[in-house]
Length: 152
Image 1 (tube, rainbow, N blue to C red):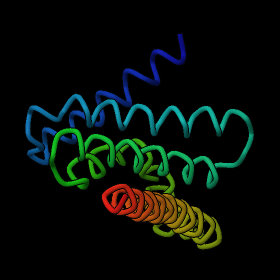
Image 2: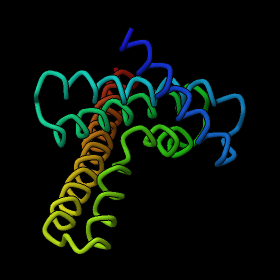
Image 3: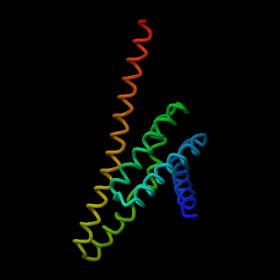
Image 4: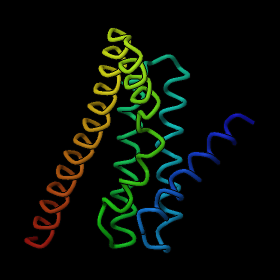
């Protein structure tokens, strides 16, 4: 039951953010699927006690790969799928805690939360960077194979 709830709410949050940011209607379902897959990778990795930062990294890789797939299938920019799909992974809770702790005078707790937010954002960015590198490598490999096939 818990898995269904996580799938449902990650899908709804992604689609809702897509509606708010004026994503075309015909790709809202693909955005929801991408966000759900990214969140489920994050959630299952975190439940295996692999660490929150690593879970965010793997979730971002899943979102990046699915965004590449859907952008090619729908012939639209990859950012249309990336941006709404990141909503479930955004560390809003720790960012809120950081501000709250600093306002209440708990500077050590605030600094701890800020570091957590920075590391999470870095893990997400690293996941997208790895996805971009893999995409370029595959594209170069396919281009070489196509040029070899044309020569023979």
